[in-house]
Length: 231
Image 1 (tube, rainbow, N blue to C red):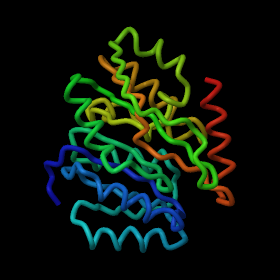
Image 2: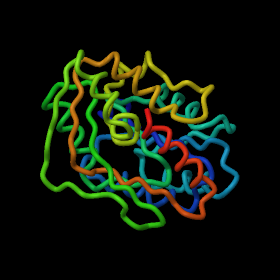
Image 3: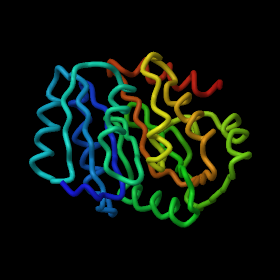
Image 4: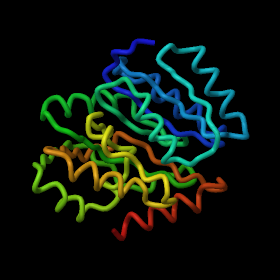
């Protein structure tokens, strides 16, 4: 695999066989091609590990790491350690990206010389769209002393990790706390944004967030969303 990729996309995986291929395909079909995809299999007991290995054989940009179950934060931290890209993205294993998400975020981080850029997301529950869709682009730029004030007012939009592109240098010294089970991404982003000089926000929904009814993680996802909304 090319060690000089521009972006590393990290996907922590645990028993996601029902949705994993959908998500992986959405990444591999991106218009932006200069990335590596790190699939971190966190001790899955279903067919997720087999799916991961299949895509490793199909596409040379895919790197698969099988490990014992330690939780999503440990998986993301391992991905950060192994990442070769100058920039890092995260995706949840049951979600998808729009076909041009990576290209769009990469263009913003370069245009504005930002440390972090983020887009909006479409929320689906039981396969049904539950959020409004913006089609007219609106960009907002925040500099260091404005960032945390904005963070405190915007809930999920800034707390989540899956709608962002990060400069890797910030993540190397600000990792996920592996000792907390909920809202770990909110704490992680607070630390990252506190250390950032420039944040760029776009209102365009380039990420697809799925809450899958009947899934064993549905209640956990909803609980985490509730926590994020009130912070």
